[in-house]
Length: 163
Image 1 (cartoon, rainbow, N blue to C red):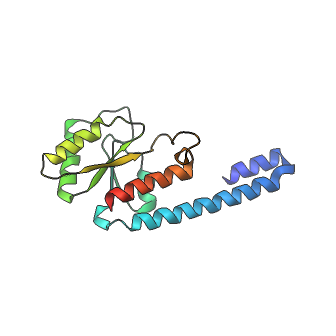
Image 2 (cartoon, rainbow, N blue to C red; image 1 turned 180 degrees about the vertical axis):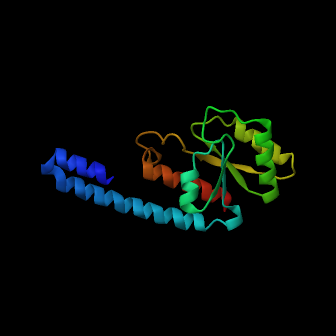
Image 3 (cartoon, rainbow, N blue to C red; image 1 turned 90 degrees about the vertical axis):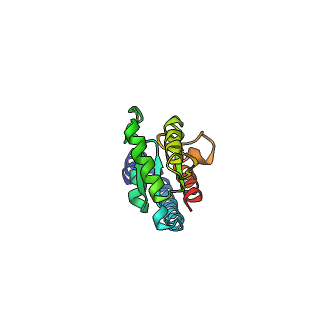
């Protein structure tokens, strides 16, 4: 964000104080968001801090907040998960008694529903804990249509389902 602030200030020096003030305020909001997410994730029992989605779009989030992230399809939303991928993930979920897995706003539900069925066949019920924003934010004009609102939504959804 410092580069944007600097570039705008150089292009429009008369407005530089305003750019600096807004950048400072936004950095403060991001720091508050970071602390909020840390507190929320810390409320999930350690053994339950496993985030499973259709594809591995949340590695950055897992690294930042101490969640093990498992994506059925890897990083690409174009690749299809195979039967072996579903079986392997289902076995892990059943063995570790994970409570919830998540769908994503930009990925069809069917693969996660296949994992859910495979877990059920292993004698464990895993819920679909909600829908997370991964490759896109929410609709413009909604809280989820902003970065901060999207992260808060994802955090609240994850924590509610895994706690």
